[in-house]
Image (cartoon, rainbow, N blue to C red; front, top):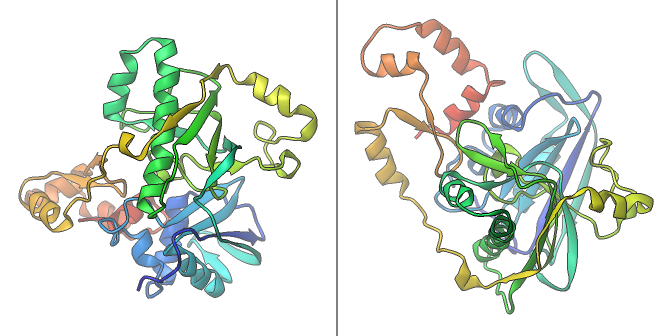
Length: 334
């Protein structure tokens, strides 16, 4: 079921557990899907609504060994419903008691502002996918800064369009990155960057920008008041006395640039029905929860599909362990 929550609404829930959570977002979502299969939030986690929402309406992050759950628009009430049910998190090999829950229900989000708002990426911003990586490599350093700033603006405009926000003016952005050399991410030829940015657009804390959002990449924190920003780890913590020093450590800064709605390519919603048919007859790959990312199917599963013998017992054990990435990807199998 989908709620009728306004798309300008966002809910941020933090789970305070009795022990540090040394698990991935995949594993946390696996616990939710296993223990609460009938809740409204599950189709937003297992890929069922992938064709309905190009921007994830529910996002799960594990930051500083603490669980954050963000609901956007239609996902807001779903997050509140889940939070009301949770008292423990049973991962099989370890169980966490939820001692407290911090819930922030925000309205009037995803709106343009008459001033620039400062944000910091608290997880790497995966700006480059396979296509944009090729374009990026062909540019000089000056062009690369402008290119990344344009991509950031497009990321924000994409979210606005997805949520039905009427943009009356350009979205202005200015990036301040630690380096122009992208950090490789996984095996997908993605490129990630660390740093900060400013934009005349109001975004809730911890939502993701760029690629790999459902994997926890691109999470942001708004520095509306730097005194409130104490993320925990020394490399991320900010206090009023060293804000300028922290910004000075960023070595690459762009000019302020504006993006129109028309500057963002139209997003395509893929037909799941068509993709199912294609995968059933031709594909030897398994789609991950990202829309355009494919990963190789394990050899044992491929042999089983082709009628060959393989280590099926090992594969079955792996698939029934909901703490693994393989279990979570099984939920997204098409």
